[in-house]
Length: 458
Image (cartoon, rainbow, N blue to C red; front, side):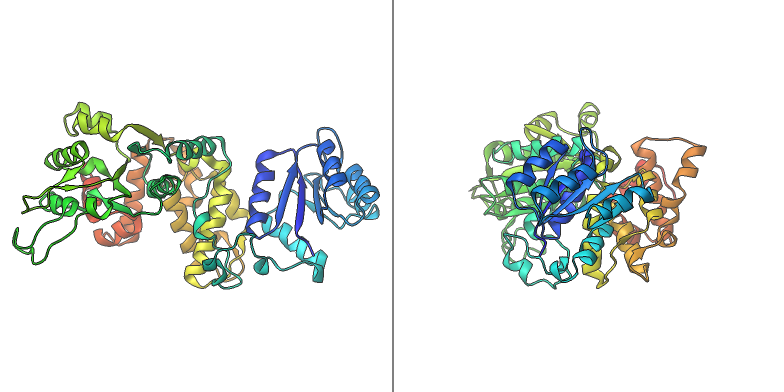
């Protein structure tokens, strides 16, 4: 029965990718980057399966295999290498290797090798339960790969992701107002929820508000509530977002879309920590932590007089920039695997992974729509996939042919990429603005603002 796996790999990023994949399948996984460290592990720990690279800085996989046979005879060994020579494979098998796998390979292929070679000795990945399995996890189907709620934030292994995650953990336990900045589709609300979960307020409400979706005429009612009869249509008392978030966190998404009048009202609430519902003379004390997000340049908006400077500084006690997907390509596999699992669950499919052509295409694409675009592409592709691997012919044309377009004209500006993404969505929706907004996962009002910003006429 395979439980404990140890990986010997000097390519740190590739090793972490394998660790993340296998841990999600329920295995306990350790790692070494040198043969010396691997030998110490074999002498001091019980390892069911050793997966080692053939060529290491200070050792060879064949020598480690021989060492394992002499010092830890119950440990089975799989060799992996980018040098797929037949004679090396034969030597490995003769020396007692369980199997041999050549790079590049998909993690799913390694899992298949493990399951096939151990046959009845290995527990199928779908039946392996994580150590601290939640009740919610236990109620999911056996073949579900969706992480539990505690795991739904993909941390990433790239340097940009590490820095970003360190900031989240650093500012989380404080009560500072945080301004989250980044391109559209990078997951600003997910980051805000992570900050909330790191905070002392995590047991209280997290209330998310799309400021771009609130008409300025009713913004005061939405934020601060109203009393019955305060205006036409106010048939009952209503609790506002501030009161709903009392003791917890209020997340203001697209905060740059607030009107100047609404900015003044918001600033007063932040300064006084008191609100007054529309139509009421009574002030209510509120204890709320404010997190806000924008994909716009608020400093530019301040200089142009569109956003209050005092409100900007109030919201920006600490700022976090979310890296775009092209800035953390090392994390691409982690996100594709996560969104694949999500798509399988929501669509009732059992797609195992992506063809090598699709993986290569994904790596070469710039992903101007970031995680939102990746998620949508994967969900659409899973729906159209008839077999177990996503083929290239179900991938959207703009993803496949992006390299050719880039070769004709290089344009790395965010504005150009976002404009093209909007045009693609409009075309896909037969120029129906409501449908296009849903495809882009933004509100109709935000779409109209973008159309005006980029001078898109329909």
